[in-house]
Image (cartoon, rainbow, N blue to C red; front, side, top):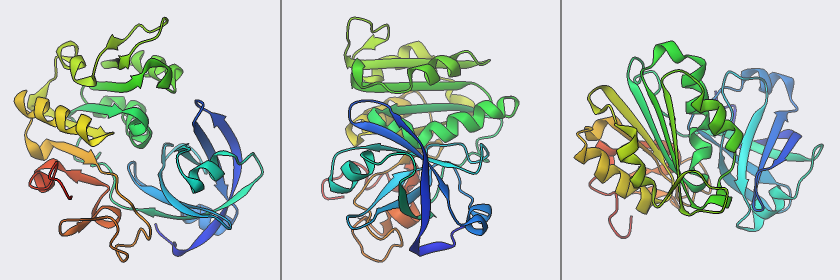
Length: 278
């Protein structure tokens, strides 16, 4: 439900986790009980987080929709607003608009194997997908999680990956372009994990999120493995400012990332995907 499309609702930070030097996860609770009770979201949707006097930015929701009455957003400090949000502490208050966009097709994925491929902070938008599948493990086939980072020190949520890997019929594979002394994963791009995964492409869906060059390489490999384009889903990133499809900043051909995405079927956007200017 989206009851605050134009005017931010107030949310209070109730927990703060410093995931890395530049990444922080903020857990918030909406202060209006009525709005909090009505708030619903699907894995893959995002909120606009507003820092008073500074501005607002789109941030994916990285918590499980069924977990509780709180929302978690994982933020990399790269700009003015994100740096300001990353400096907030428990008890501080922000504005929140949302949820916006189209999420992952988890209902259509039932009884299928789920392949999750992410790079960098692209893991945040798919954390709710992984939790959703694990919490309903008998309703899905194999769960394969492949995560790549530039440097092994960039990997956040190591405990989560270890916990996910302990669930039945679940495989977790990690890769880093540069590995540190304590790194036990693959050294190289995330595509080097494909040989270890033994992907079940006949009755599978793939969910991808991360840098577009990585996604293009993974899509190429998935299609070569036999996965149909309409079984590949991609979360796209663009400059989203209004989240309502009105400002035009995130226009992608005849679509808007904020309204028609951020999750798209590769079959629907492959004529644009990777084309310069889009």
